[in-house]
Image 1 (cartoon, rainbow, N blue to C red):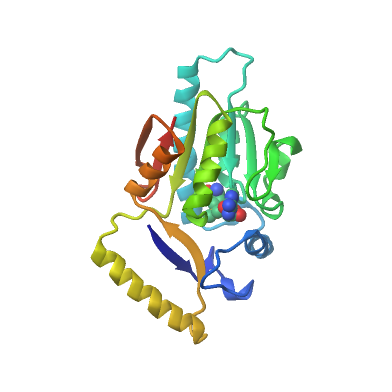
Image 2: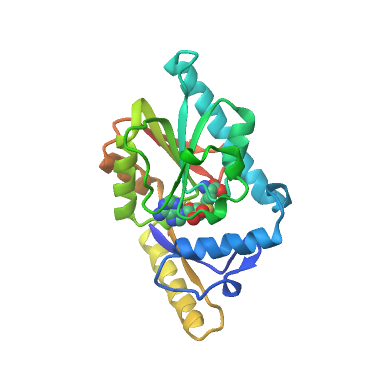
Length: 255
Ligand SMILES: C[S@@+](CC[C@H](N)C(=O)[O-])C[C@H]1O[C@@H](n2cnc3c(N)ncnc32)[C@H](O)[C@@H]1O
C-alpha cells in the first residue's frame, strides 16, 4: 500500500479551489468545492473529457454484464427488484449509464455531500440517495450488489474495513460487494517502497516551499492488500481481475 498525491483533477488545479494538505486526505468539503468548480466549467456529463467518459463506460459495461449474469443466476421473480447501492457515486456518470442500460434497476446511491449529485438527482427518487461519510442508509433495505467505483483510494484501511463490514451486513443472501479500483498498485517491493518514500520526501519539500503544492489524495493498494481486506471483513468467496477494455482498472468481488 502506498500513499499518493495529486495536484489537479479533470483539468482543475487544486490550488484554485482549496488550501492543499500534505498530510490530511481531501474531505467532503474539498470534493464539494471541487464539484462546484467542475459544474461551473462543464454543462453536462457529455461535456467532460472523452478519455474520462470512456473509462467510466468500461466500468459501467463491466457492471452491467455482472448485474445481468447475477440477476439471471438469482432467478428473481418478475416483480422482485434487483437492488444496487453505489458508494461514493460522485457526479453519477456510471450510475446514469447503468440506468440507461437497465431502466428497471433499483439503484440507490451514496455520496458524502449533495453537491456532486446535481445531474444525477433527477434520475433517482430522493429516498434512494444517502448523503454522508460514513454512509448512512436504512438498515432494513438489503442489496443484491453494492459497489465502490474509484472510491477505496480515499479511505484508510481501518475505515474501509468498518465500511465493508457494514456493507456486508446489508447484502441480500448471495449478494456481493464489488470494489473497482483505478488506483491499483502492481507491486510493493522494499526497493519500490524506498524509492517511493524518497519521491514523497521530495514532494513534501516542494509542497512546503510552495513550489508545487500537493494534496494527499489517498492510497494505492496491491492485489494482496485487496484480498487481505476482503478476507478480514469475512467474505468467504473472493474473485478478482482486470477490466478487459480498461486493463488498468482492477476489480475484486466478495460474497
Ligand atoms: C474519484 S471519485 C469517484 C466517483 C464515482 N464513483 C466514479 O467512479 O466516477 C471519488 C468519490 O468518492 C467520494 N468519497 C470520498 N470519501 C468517501 C467516503 N469515505 N465514503 C464514500 N465516498 C467518499 C468523493 O466525494 C468522490 O465523489
